[in-house]
Image (cartoon, rainbow, N blue to C red; front, side):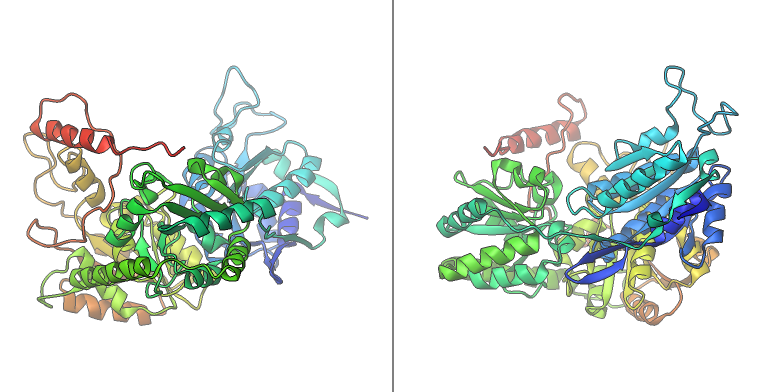
Length: 625
């Protein structure tokens, strides 16, 4: 039996029938489709989404990159078992997907991209928005998506859709391969009819596997842990993707091995778990940094060891340090010349715990006492950052975080990606649940927060979802506020005004760049942007997009506004300007060095001094072999 449908109609029908299953939990793979329509998809996928609106929900986006971010936020909150599709027209609509695709692939989060493409039959050549490539007639702007996609195909004939769609689903549901998947769809092919086999539209379930460890690798891992005097776990995003938080807590409690977390891994243990020692790397805690410097075995669980979030090239200074890497991806399992333990994080941790408990293995009591006392001292530093001397004064950024920290419970989710907030949050935030801390730091993409919060809220409508954004990030991509208002998705936006790129401003100063071009201020006669702050009103802008806005000038008003926003059932923004003068205290400084090259020759004193400091730090680099 066959069914005659257009390619676009067939694709929508196919996607609606795809499901995932893990641990007996089955759910729909493609929960909805985001779209902005142009001539490249309006008559194809646009018509198909109208035709099958009863089986494929649709969300109207305002920016193509933002639509991908929303789909990624949905996928992460869904533990990678579900995601959204994103359709755009050809030309700028398609190329706007590239940043979002890179973010999805870097973070191993599934998203399906369905950009329109130029005519396959070439009746009009060039068509509107077509890039002509004189040396290759089969290249279009969609080819920019190849390097940032885990799977790419261009469907130039209707019958090609069947194998392409099946391969796309395979990659989306593969815990190792997953990321952005792109099916480029020429606009004429989208509208072309074909007789499809009925089986193509049958319900299909993709099992997300949990492979266990190889017995030899497991034995070597157990031996390495038993012989270590100062082991340290580095928990990455793979702990969350595998839903291995409970297994990690059991492993840590049984062995008393301390656990530090990357940005993606924070929340793997609750902040008050005895073995949780906070964030690691450039933005980590002093407790984790000191443990990392002296560790003789680093047990990476689901981490890629990126330089900023682990300081892997400089922080681990014990001359005898070795690495044991539990990772479902062999590529990451072999990093830093480590012992690989290639397995699902939950399965691998369970096997390690069982073996170590059988041997009665725990770390020495003195080691546990050492990090426990350091952990308590760090918590006191956090309390000091959150402390408020004058409730009617303008808050510092740590005090803004402290006000929110005091308000939320396990049901709240905070979303952030870029600026100075990730560093402060990694050090100071007290994660109360496994999925409360939603930091996108694989790509650290400005503009991610608001659309991602929208995606998180769609995946978990019962949760309180906060997008934490600075003024620089807000100006990048506030567009999906309109979508939140349109669909009544009650996200909360905490908008922090500090008049520029605070994080890069600090980095610029430290590397001799003198904060050039990082402030949102008027230029001076000297050509620097150090004049008065710009008279922009971001609160008014958010209100103009339909959001309810609460302005807070003091700590007292901030606390009241946050409580009001949390109780709101409509999209609500809390706007606060922070105190940024040199006389106020901020978060504790960086606990590990981040390698950012400094000008080797310069005449300005700040750059010369920065180079001298850089050369001293460079000597701490290591190649772990």
